[in-house]
Image 1 (cartoon, rainbow, N blue to C red):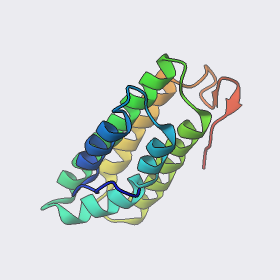
Image 2 (cartoon, one colour):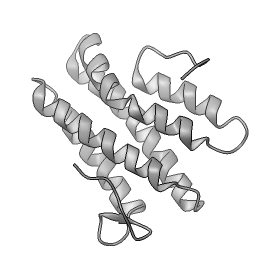
Image 3 (cartoon, one colour):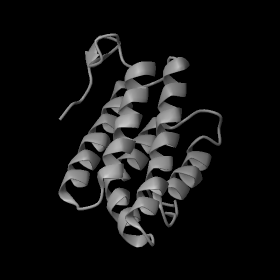
Image 4 (cartoon, helix red, strand yellow):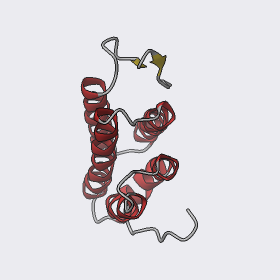
Length: 139
């Protein structure tokens, strides 16, 4: 994202970027989606640069939960774009594959399940695969 510095981990990056993209009082969902797209890469970065994989995954998980909080808030304001929800779902799916491919990332899958569960409970239609009648991305 031009003009935006990237933090040392996903959680701090999310905090920093959310502050910038919501300064006007509304969330720029195009920029939010750009931030969400970074999640799988940050999962690899955070899990390999912290003293332990578990610490890195925990930091990454905090960032994902912050994103989830924003998505839920946008939904409650009837402002959530389907494209944004699809991007979160896609990033969760890509992160799930990474966790299955890298040794020691089981806690990452647990974190992804929590985020997906929160979205299913708070955002998705009753069938768990649609949002306002539209199909949400699944792998």
